[in-house]
Image (cartoon, rainbow, N blue to C red; front, side):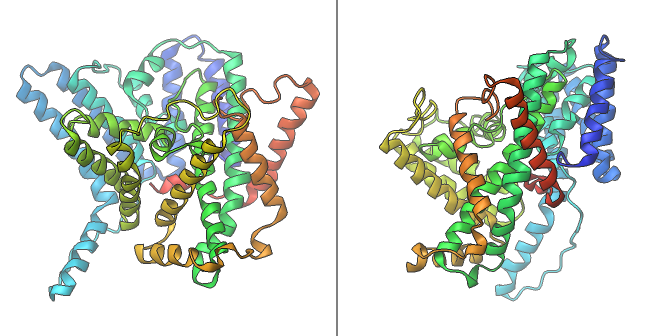
Length: 480
């Protein structure tokens, strides 16, 4: 069930009404309703994978109880390793086995060795990367004892499968989400109304911006050898905007939806394309994943406490794992490596925390230096997204080389630069810039307008989303 579908537009109000009317005075029944609704939401993709979701949930719930009751450090390590091993084993089997098996075959071929492994050729269960990280963070926290084991299976199952975040995050922490699930919730009209505005803005990002950029981006990347450098740069810019609006649009819809049920999710994006360096970009892009790798990989490996070389090693490892997490392809790993190369000079010169505040805070426009830094960071990110988007590393190399030819400054074809799209993109960038200190672009915009004018804006945006949704695609991050 897609957020940008008629089915979800019917599903959400039904769950909302049942949640706040028949069950509003009983948190247990509210959670049961959320659990049933979440499993129905997931079953709309493929009901067979419900058993995998249930198994993963049961495994980590029971592991938490075993960790709490274990009487020796050895027993605690056993239960931790068992849960982590099974979770990562399932993820590896579905997501990575065929990739590494094929890579082994390719590596042996030049040596004259014919290897014939068994390939699984299984469909990747939607959301498996996200709910696996939910479970792993819970088990690790119980093992380290900053969190106590959850004794209510219903509450824990809602934490893992809460439908707004089940398929593509944000990646939640038990310490943040479980207390909200367990406590009684009171309807907050102000929060719910702002949640609706956030949902609307998320749909604008996805349906109007991302899906519109996808059409020329797919055309250019699919036939890149036929285009001049300027057109290839345009295609890269289209994809750069597409992947941001697609994924952050999903996060806005997820966060806004959760607020309708009195639950606050972790923020996942904070206007990353207005960053002044790559370190700031990674503090603002996919925040829940970046912080997960920091807390559960970077810091346990020693973080930045054990010397500069260990810090460099850990940084490179985190970026490589981040690339691999996105998918079983060498271009994703190369994308992670390229971002590590971008990041390391900042780390070596202790400049990785130079920009901790919002750019041009309290001002309308950035300084010339800030504008130059934003442009340079955006250009570096754009090149990295080319590596991410291309099918192979060879294609990425050819694309970048062709883009940097002397025809980089020639005008691109008119059919790839429709005026309505350029105007829409310009308006979107301005709206995001003006709202860069807010949670989302509609958080405060137009709130002081006369009511008829404000509602006319919302109606116009909703109408544009509705009439554009017929050509809408599924969200990019569903494949990860």
